[in-house]
Image 1 (cartoon, rainbow over the protein chains, first blue to last red):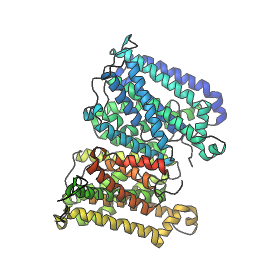
Image 2: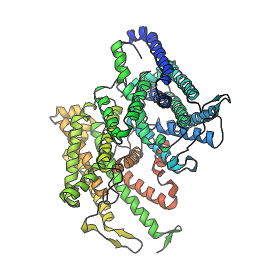
Image 3: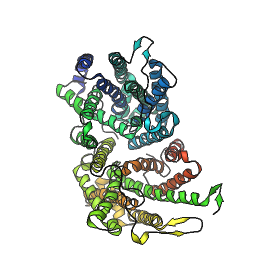
Image 4: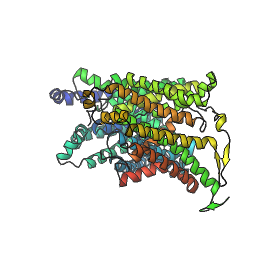
Length: 324
Length: 295
């Protein structure tokens, strides 16, 4: 069974350095993100933040429960569509539209997770990929999604009727607060007794079953949580770009989130954030290269798997002997 | 002309034929996946890209060397199979002892590289490829028109499937292969070169994908994304059939192709999703797949 996804650092050191290292890294991250919009184009930052949350949600499943989903675009993309639809056609205020998109992703996650956790390992990956592809075709055909055009000109609206989100800075603060909240929630889940059981399942599922844990329930809850936060990321992205499109439900998007998490470090807390910023930056700056982006992405996958399995943050944590 | 369930026979049998053709490709591709998985413990995400390489190789041989379809049918699986063996030696051998998911991610990355390279050189519009002269035209069977080339694809892929099944289940070489799948260490102890068998098996599975690609070239346009379109459906086919049985993979492939074809006649909106829906139903009723052994 599963050789561990992320090789853990020696336990004694981890315990001592755990709180301090994570707290310092978290403060640095928040400080950087607070200053960043004055230096970097805010829309780029918001895009990267949405992907960071998406990757964190994905990492909860693959890094801690050892379940590789190749279909997370399903939750990201559908939440994006439903949030956009609620905001544009039903005139929902932004907070309600985001909530609606996120909750729908949770429901979709419950359905997809219920099917997918019936099989393990590579079958799990193939099932999630197939289910996501099915929902891609549904999105392609469904009348409300606008087919190839997507849902355009989604209004950002006024948050709680007070803050005008069409202002870039206000929108940035809203996205930042939501993403940080999601990040902290996921961190809390990982470090809860529930999270410990997930790690036990990742390391040795038969053993966890023999200890009396109903592992399929834990896996389902982890799946639903992961789908829900992937949905929150997708819903936010719909408001940031004022657009929901087929790109967000296509299998390439599922691959991209795998790439971000892998580059940053599977099973690390900050890895997905670092990976998301790097990959989004790479795609932004290399956009004029066209199809070469695909080749470069593929090459990064290959290199990461062969020589760099811990990812950037994983290697950093190992060098500094802390848990990040 | 007559009607069945209110559908003209031409349309019904026409879609049934398309279903059988798609089924042939599903069967060939899932067969290759199953053979590779049995031996390497890797789900070969590159399979779709290698199928696409097969189609492009046939196109390029005709375009630049003037080598026709029949030559391509022999040469291309060997060429692409050899490239597969290179991939196994260069990359895959290092992930075999790791968790399954690394093999999947690695082959996914390779698929992106290959697809990206082909898109750079050939664009994404696709190139036409004529069926060979010998198989031009078709037969009028009274209830439908049967193009010769399509009949050939169905018959030939059945033959290839049967030969593969026979080699693996009924010959000495196949028994080594099955034994090495069960217990590689013991087979090695008997003096059989298992790593070389692994490389050859991967090459064979890739060769099957390339063969399917050559056969597909005259039917679909030869385009860089033809592989990624089909591979996800093939994954669903593999989940439905389970990878434990060679015969299971073949039967499931053809059956799902036919079901998909029939759906196009009676409920066209669902034709692109029907295989995934069947997968969901199978997972609910029989989680190990129709022909799967309990995991």
